[in-house]
Length: 221
Image (cartoon, rainbow, N blue to C red; front, side, top):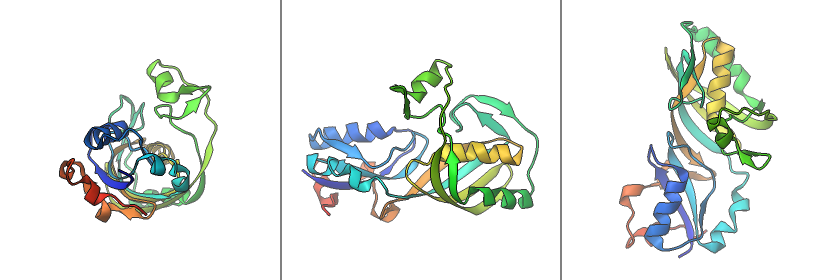
């Protein structure tokens, strides 16, 4: 069994959960994907099924992605998302004009510092492993490209549509935007609506997949 499988990942499941689920369903060991989603996030995951397609992972390395995100203003967490521990709060309520002004800073090429709670490796160690031991290390900023559009703002919820380059952390955008607004912010929901050329329209919910029908959903392009 070989091909691409476009999943709609449910909330509360890790990206490795998706790999493990498909290994059990297909009895194929060589399974990968083209971009991790945190347990909080839902939406498009392009799964690579079989050795031929896992070898092609570099072909998808430059794929851009699109998201719909909700930021919770007024609080800062250690993970930069709502699953983390609250470390700071603010009573400042940004005006719509302040929101519009700050969004101008999140357009084009940005220098983004990876969050400590991330799978990025420094010195051979995953950052989240260090963070869980209360160890913070210096991280070099990484250039990413971002287009950010306002969907809706009703304090404390700020809803945005984002088009981003590979390796962009939406959690870090929430954190950095909250700092500029002077009120803190954390990511409270995230849905990936597109990965490369694949959208939610092509995505299959996990509960629709069975051992007998999965091949019908494989894309072999």
